[in-house]
Length: 329
Image (cartoon, rainbow, N blue to C red; front, side, top):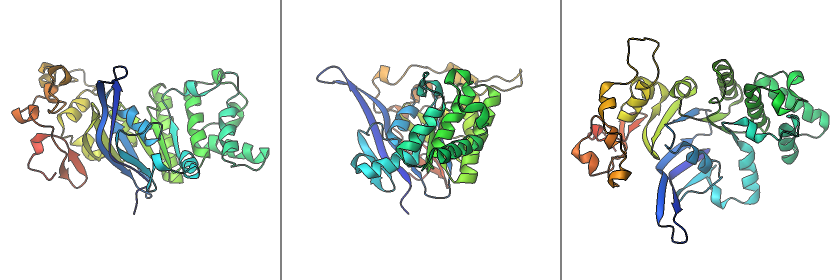
C-alpha cells in the first residue's frame, strides 16, 4: 500500500554568495522515511542543533521544496498537487511548533486561533456547533474550556498556550501531526501532560505523529521508532527500544551518554568522547568522509576516504557506520 506520507531520498541545499551563489550548505541529504496509513505510529526525529531536524519538518510540511528527491502525501508529490489536493493536505497534516506565543495575535482572544481554521475549512455549520467542536478539542488535550476560552494569550501559561495549539491541530481532524520541539519551552510537569495528550491523539483518535526533538529522553518516552540525524544525515534508525537500549552508531551512543544520570559518582560522558578532536570535516575539506569522523573514537582510515552507507543491522535497525560493514546495505 502507498504510504500516507513519504520522503524519498530528499536533499536540501541552501546556496549563498550573491548572484553566482557559489557557496552552498547541505542541510539535509539522502533521507527517506514513511508514515503508513495504519496503524498510527509516532516517529521520533532526534539530533542536536544543526542536524537538519527543522529543515526536515519544513520539507514534510511543504513549506519548502527539496533540492533533490520528493515528498509525497497519499502518493501525490507535494510540489505537483492541485489546489484542492493541497487544501486537503494542509488540513490533514498539521503542525505544532516550539514557541506557541509566536502564533497568537496579542490583540485577539485565544478563541481566534481555533475559530479561523474551522471557518476556513467549513467544519462547523453554526456558531453553536463551532463552540462545541472547540470545547471538545480543548477537553481532549486536558484543558477546561471555561478557564481557557475568552482569554488573551498573555493571560495563559506557556503550557496552556501550547496545548491550545495541539487542540487547534486536533479539531481539523488530521491524519498526521508534526510536533517540532513541542515541550522544550515548558516545565517538567507540563511536559508530561503534553506528552500524554499527544499519546492520546494516537491511541484514541488514530493520529500519527512526527515528534522532533533534541531531547532523547522525551523522544524515547513517546516514540514507536526513532531516526537520529547528524549534520543533515540519517545515522541510525529503528524501533525506539532498540535505538535507545542498544545504540550502534557512535553519535547515538554519545547522545545517550550525555543524558544526566542521578548517580553523582557516574560521569555523564565517556572519557574517549572527551578526548577526541571536535573540529568539523568541513574545516578540513574532507567532503568524501564520514561527517562524524573527527568526533568518533572508532574512526578508521576508510572513514576519511568514503561516506558510509546505511547498513541493515537488524529487522528494523539501520546504522550509517563502517563498524557494520559486513551487514547488508
